[in-house]
Length: 632
Image (cartoon, rainbow, N blue to C red; front, side, top):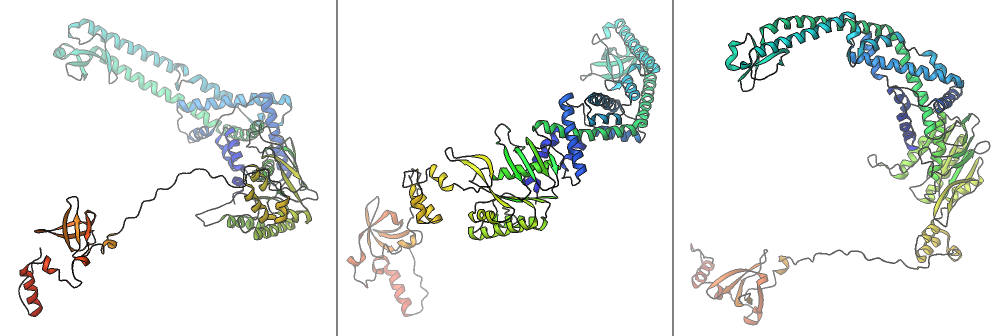
């Protein structure tokens, strides 16, 4: 089972991780688990307190993410050349280390033990100043070396001479120019020459316009300077690489120290993030014990708005090991048990707790079953999921465990569920663990009154406003208030009587005072379903008309005689004067039935068949013949 997710400690971790700066600290936060060593836990809690005090007195610490810095140091350690950007990142981290040292130095005035981590930081001032002096704006500065400064001055001078020579050629040949300015094409200074004057200008064609009417030529007087410029640029590049390799070597030399600095920054980030979380949640340092007792004063759920959260008072230990919490639905039972366990886990992870004061015991395991746990993919019902989780809890529980079970025994037959709930409680009681259980079963409340080391508790409820007060009263059993809430919300008296009678018998009905005077349910108008009428099938119409029936055909109102009954398509055949027609039964109405017109054994072929066809049929009945009866 995922304990952290069930009690929402994963959400607390997410809030905590957002307050960290370095990737390493964020990862460590998400991996945080409870601490089993008492000495280590007390140290972690002291660190959290010192971190909070340091931030409250000096403000937020000057931390930054150093993941990129580790990659840069790896490059330098391999002997590769760092880029100006990477060197600037080194300088910024060294500046951050210097600022962090100064920040911690100030903390020594308050005798804060975290402040003495300053002695483990080395800002490598010489390297920082060297990079600051030679790298600026993402490039090697002109003054990084005397030689580089001279080379770049010569480059500027050479470029200016090239421009001047180009302009001289343009002024001397104005009629040949397509424009009044020189330009750079492929890194060369060119002048725009009209195509027809190409041979008049001494130089090389470097490019041409899209139309081809203008040629961009490098004058011969400029070309000699271009060669000189290329030599200067090679010299500049060599000097830049010399400076970068020198700085990279210095970074590599300082790498061991810087790796220790980065590790210290990450460690401090983790510790200080706990102080930030304590401030954000208005938390306090808890006392810890191994005497199996928990005392929380004004406890809050750390994820709830502190302005609306109702403080919880909780006390367990000494002679009490288990608490059975009862009360109405939405009364805050689940929030209460989550609040207790969440604060206990936070304390055992070295965090402050959201209480006015707290004394919390260390636990070897935190076990719980919260929620219905339905899982369709695994074919688990609510009850099956509960039992699966509870069996896992029972297999792991011991005298140093802390267990919470929500709605124990729910999701099945109430009588059997109650029996299972008591069996579970008895097993938990024997284990010696601390446990909190919520339930609605009255038999479980009675069990708590009689069992050793177990007490009842109830969540209070305001019957006037129908709202929970979220206060836990230990030592008293609570009621579900289901009938009272249903009555106040308008359930008719007759329905309530049935409910009370079924639950407590006839005597309880007479004793119950109903506030709602309505005796029946008031029905509201709701839309009605419009159903399509089923049409008669053609099979049902097969006997509607018989051969010989006199029928009237609409809309012509002609009289005819049925010669073929209705088929599966709802069509019949009618004999009219001089012709026979097929017609849908919906256009036909019975005029005179055949039984009224003809004898019972009347031969209708006399009416509907030709003399020739009748003769052929007669011959077929007496002997073999090749004649064919023609159908109309």
